[in-house]
Length: 197
Image 1: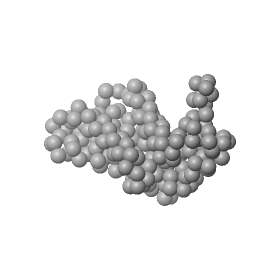
Image 2: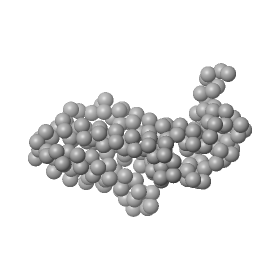
Image 3: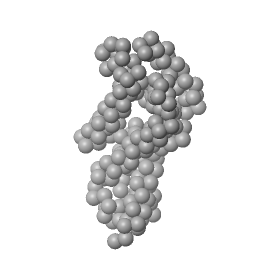
Image 4: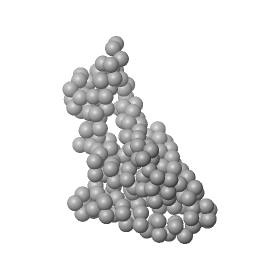
């Protein structure tokens, strides 16, 4: 089989899966719905992804890669300061909420689905550990005088701020101005952290 055609078909299937997950949620997603959305026969979906779990794991990887790629792109352009390095994380989440809603919604869906699927849960846990470790690395680098307990707990607080914005936007999209919200989050964090530079 032509590798270009294979990649195109897999891409169509993953794009379709993302749309179906956003429309039906993960629990309502079915292989035949993905096939319909991708405009392929269901046997094509099963050729590339033997089971729904296998397809969902591939989609989860795609969502996580999108998150990572956004952060890395911002990191390459950022300055070597606490403000700039923390801003990367908030900028990434703001971009997902406002420009890539389908990825943000899918991420929350994977959190819920992880309660029923050990592989999805394990990958979700790994991604959150990496997210917090990346934040912790910035805090340790720029705030060496911060006590160890705070260095450990702050990444959880920062992730909670960002995921809180996702949840509130999902519940009432027009109610939360994410630009203002994240600016206030960054302002509060920097006010606290600057005393430990």
